Length: 238
Ligand SMILES: [Zn+2]
Ligand SMILES: [Zn+2]
Image 1: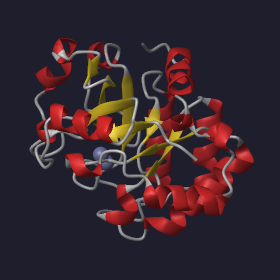
Image 2: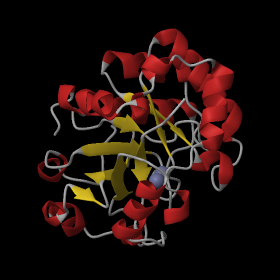
Image 3: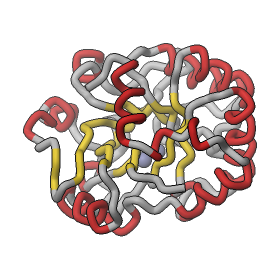
Image 4: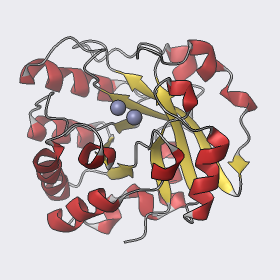
């Protein structure tokens, strides 16, 4: 399976990532990717960008080194109601919005709170992708999350960095999510979650999970740029 785009990458703007958009685009070009989503952390992440970062993304070119750049955010889900740390007037200007639970930005740890928070975030029409839902510190009701993903047409992420550098213990959760997503016809995207340019387009472990889960290629949005952009257009983006 050939994945041509990376839906989740960070730049120096995130505060704990180490490459510029130029370096990320160069690496993406070297690896033959056609598109990357620039999805720096929302402002509630300690060291994260000021909200002006997202308001000013209009200055970013559409393409760098032949790689299309989608302007986005990895917003923090901050409460059980699924509220994000980015106001609506900014969300509506972005090409792509990932919503994720992060330990420092979300106070709850019980299955019910985690599940409710994610489902409520999916109800936000500007949310396109749920980031790393296999994180073992946030146990979720996988069936409920995937049924909501189908109902609200939200894409579920398989996050390569969960298997490599962060969120230890994600593997089995992600495999279960991938298997059930396949049964329930839920759209999947693969993100490297690169915090340094060398990891842009790194999908090795995610591909292993996809293969083990026998996930249908049609459900994976990274195999074709038009397929991914069509999905976003259906969500009212681009
Ligand atoms: Zn994250
Ligand atoms: Zn991330």
